[in-house]
Amino acid sequence: MFRFLLAAAVTLGLSLSAPTAPPKKGAPKSHPAGQGEDVRGAMSLREIAQKTGVPAGHFRQALKLDKSVDLNQPVREWIHSKGMTVQDVREAAKTYKSAKK
Image 1 (tube, rainbow, N blue to C red):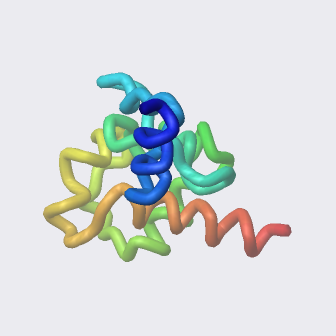
Image 2: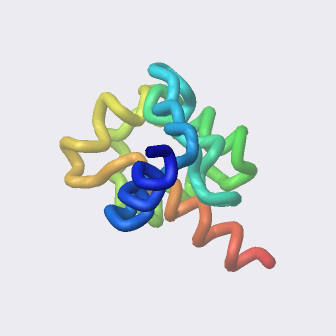
């Protein structure tokens, strides 16, 4: 009987390994190495500049931000109104770092 069930499972392409657990709720999202692991929407551009080593002025220029954007305000509070996402901030940091190598 066991051989029959094993053969049926193999024929149907069923996995005999233990199921993997889903990611824990609230677990931090991972980003590919060097691609924004330090940048979060809750951070201000000034905090992001300090954490990444990328000058705040570079973000202002790369993202085409006018002087009305407060560098101390969390990014998530204004980024979408400018038609961008936090990923755009990460990309600006990556571009700066690539150019400095």
